[in-house]
Image (cartoon, rainbow, N blue to C red; front, side):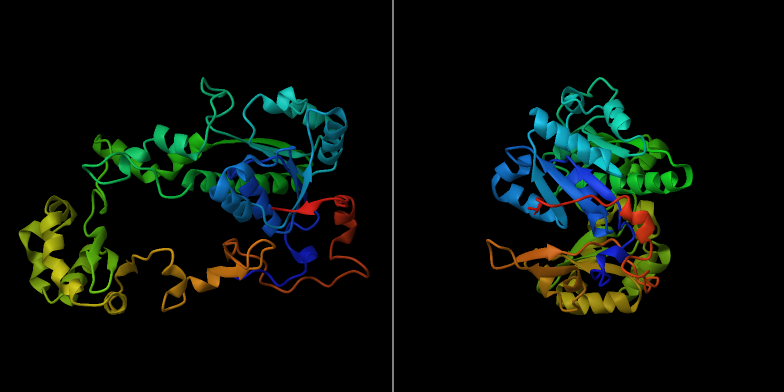
Length: 391
C-alpha cells in the first residue's frame, strides 16, 4: 500500500499521543502502526536503550523495522527526576504501551492503578509472554518460546527432521497487530463512553490463535497435527512444491474443479478420474504418486511460463523466491511494497511500506490555522521539544 500523501494532521489518529515503553518487536510494532496512522509516538528508552540495540545486526534491523515515525527520549526510570518526567508524559497521553515483564512496571511505580490515577482515561496496553495471571506469568517470554509451547514448532519442518521455528518472528509481529486492533477498539469505545481501558495481550494467546485451523482439524479428527514438510495434511495438491526449469512453484488445486483443470493443463485429463486421485482423502493417501505424475509437466516450463499457464485457468500458484529475487519479480507485485530509504549511517535501507491502508479520500476542509478537528486535537497534543527521531 503506498504511503499516504496527506499531511500528518489529516491521518486518522492525528492528535493522539502514545507513550511507548516497548522493547524489541511486539509493543514497539504496535506503537509504530499507530504512528503510521498518524499518532504522535514518544518512545521511552532507558540509559542502555531498547534492548534490541545491543544484539548486533538483528537488533539493528529490529530497531529500523519497528520504530519509524517515532520520537525517542532516554529516561532512567529508577531516577526520581526521570520517573517524574515519565509520569508527566503519561498524564497527557492517550495510549501507553509496554512489554516489560509482569511486575517490572509495578516496581518502577508505574502499575496499572498508578497510571490510571495519573490519567483516568488512558488506554494502557501491556504485552507479556505467558499472560499476567497464570502460573507462568513471571517467565521471560519471546517469540520462540511461544512458538515452542503452542505446538507451532512441532508442525514446522520435514516429517523426519527436528521441530523448526518459523523463519521469522511471526508471533511477535502478529502480536503487534493484535495490540493495535485492541487499542483502536479501546479508543473508539472511549470516544463513545469517555472511559479508558486496560489491555493485556500475551504472545502465547496469539501463537495459539494463529493455529486455529490446526486446532480445528485436531478437534475434528482427534489426530494431533505433525510435521509433514510441504503439503497440507488433509488436502492435495495443496501447498505442494513443483520444480520448474529455473526454480520452483507452489500450487494449491485441491477442489475437484481445480484439480480437473490442473490435470487437463498438464495434458493428463484422465488423472482426475484415477481411483488414487478421485477425492482429497485419496489424493492425500497417494500424494507421492500424484506429485510424481505432475512433476514432468512443470519441469519442462520456466517459472514464469508455469505461473502464466496456471493463472490462465484460475489455479492458485506462486513462485518460490529468495529474498534477493523478491524485488526483481517480473510482474513488479512486490516492488511497490518495498522502497529504499536513506539512512545516516548507510547509503540506503530496503524498507517495507506499511500494509495498513491509509486514507484514500480527500480530507475535510481545514479551519483557519488548524486541522479539520483542531479544537479537539489541541488538548491532546504533547510538546516534543528535545525528542530525537528513532532509531
